[in-house]
Length: 409
Image (cartoon, rainbow, N blue to C red; front, side, top):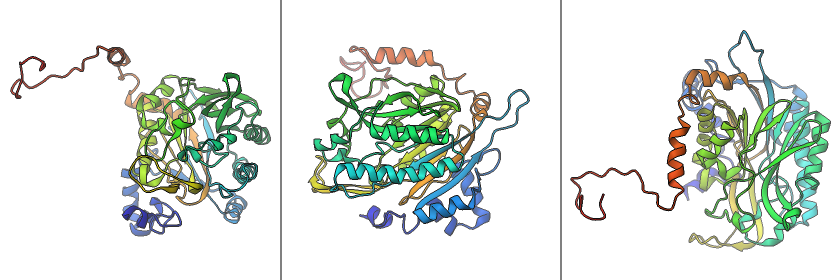
């Protein structure tokens, strides 16, 4: 297909690491700034600032083969509040070993690889870090095979959770660890969850994925169903954060509920492939940040994961062994509509961003979205919509054929 030709077998985009790389390669510098203004927005009157990191961090990232980028979002100075700058980080990663390797070895190799990037984040001064969806395992939910459930673990004592707790204590860092959860207290039920670990290594709480896809190879409801934790916002020492897991980004009300509950940063740990969602990726997190006046960290898995047995998904495609390419491209979006460039489409990566949380309230004051949102209007509509006797508010042109006859109100 044209998509496969353009995306490249190495995961690049027509030979480039990202859309931003293509823009820089082909658009003159004096024109590029206007393209950036329209496509990515301005923060305080100019593109989001790049932040230099220590040379040893950049060198280490190159040596270890992961992308490293850093940016800063600013807010206007205020007379009655000091700046509230928090350094956040997003990690995207491939699996390390083939899916045919022993499961224990696969999990250990992923922890070791992700640990390198968590250490880099700690050295860079990151205070709140989010990993990708089900980061501790291959994203095997396309296969519908149940042996992959062995990777599920306790949200309190699981091996990857304990690993992240140790990293949180090491760096004084809040870590969001999205996992496949095994709920032993409820008959070993499995959930797609995210564990929020405090800067002291304590578990603050968890959130379970609200919306489960049933599209293409995303056969996730074979393994877990919709979550039951609502829309929690976790108050940490660095700010109020929430987690909108993967497919939930397609549901505007899901984003909105986290905002209603007071989130200042919402992370969207994901695992999604180019042929399905890439044109949506750069739009949805940015839209959510704008509509809800908070920061969004959008994280996506990287690489192509091949499984031992072929599978189909009832969509007319031939049997195959992989999902397609997880295209990375993680980025941060701000409430003023600006966003960072993305991490590479084909590499593991760490994106660092300084976010001034004062920008959240400043944007609310400027645009007035919460003030003008009229929740009572929509509460009444949704209350009617949930009833079995709901009738849409449809006003039909009386000149249409059949107007005024029985069954045509």
